[in-house]
Length: 402
Ligand SMILES: Cc1ncc(COP(=O)(O)O)c(C=O)c1O
Image 1 (cartoon, protein in one colour):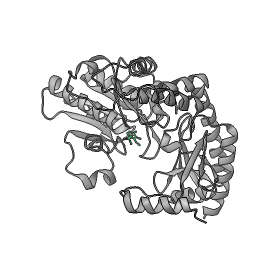
Image 2 (cartoon, helix red, strand yellow):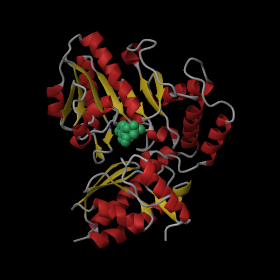
Image 3 (cartoon, rainbow, N blue to C red):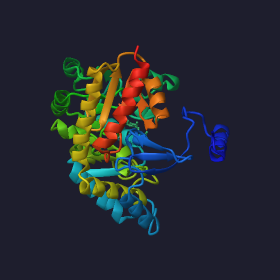
Image 4 (cartoon, rainbow, N blue to C red):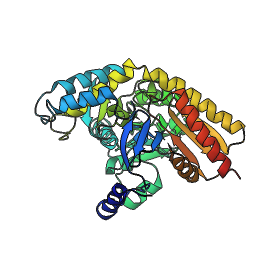
C-alpha cells in the first residue's frame, strides 16, 4: 500500500523531474550503515551504495559531524581565496595517490574532462600535430559531458549526441598486441578505468596497465587512470592502479571520495602539472570547504576503521560465496572484480529480473546489462551482510533458473 508521502513524491517527480532516470517505485527516507529505509520503515540491504558512492556507509556519524561542523563555520568562498580544508585535502590525496597536485571539481565526469583537457593541451604543445590521438578502451565509461562522452566507447551513450569530440581511438581491452600497435609519436595519452564499471565490471589486467605505463614513457604520452568507480578503497587499496605497481600521470577520482557528498578531483604529477596556466581551467564550487571537509572525514574513517582491509577480506568472501552458488547450479558463468567491486556474469539474460526480485526481497543490487549484475556495497559491510545477501540471491537464482 502506497503511503501519502510516496503518492506525493511520485506525482511531483513524474510531473516536474526530467525523466532521464528509470525509477523504482520506492521512496527512501533514511540511511544508516549498509541499510536504507523506505517511507514504510522497511530496511533494505544496500549493495549498490548509491553506485559505489557511500563508501563509509550511509550517514556515518563522523562524516555527519564533520559536515555539520563545517556547514556551521564556512561553506563556500570561491577559489579566489585560500581555505584550510582544500589545502589539507590536496595534501592527503597526493600522499595517498603518489600524485603531486590536485584540482577539485564536483563529479567524475568533470574529473575526466580535465584529464582530457590536459592531454589535449599537452598534445598541442608537445606533439605539435593536429592529428594526435587519445587512446581509450572499448566498453569504457568516463561520464556524460561532451569530452568525457567522446571518450566513452559505448554506442548507446554516444550515438544520440554525435558529432563527438575528434581525436579518440578505442582499443579492445586487455589486448597487449593492439595496445603496442596503437601507440605512436601521435599518441598524446591513454585514458582507462582499471576496472571497467558501467561497461560490465571488467578488470584491466595488471600487465596491461604496466605495458601502458611503459609505452607512455617510450612515446612521451600521458597515462590517465579513471578511478572514479574503482578508486578510494573499493578494491582493497586506495587506488586500483596500486595493485599493478604503476604510477599514472593523471588520476580522476569522485564517487567514494565524498562518501555521498558530491566532490571530485583530478590528481596529477610531473609534466601533467605544468600543462595548464592560471585562468585556463576552473570551476565555481570545486574544492569548497564543505566538500573538502567531507572528503577528509571519509579518509579518516577509512583509516580508522581499516576499510581497505575490510574491502579486500569481505570482498574475497563475497566472491567465494558467489562462486559457491555457481558451483551449486546458480545461472552464473563468471564472478569477477576486485575487493568490493564485483560483477556476476549470468548464463542467460536475466540480470534485470534478478535485480527486481532481489529488490522485492529488500536487497539492492544493480544490473549493468541484461547479463551482468554489479555489486558495489559500502566498504563497511560485514561477512554477515554478505551471508544475508547470498541467502536472497540463492532464492532468486532458484526462481530464474531454466
Ligand atoms: C569510471 C567512471 N568515470 C566517470 C564517471 C562519471 O561520474 P559522474 O557520474 O560523477 O559524472 C563514472 C560514473 O559512473 C564512472 O563509473
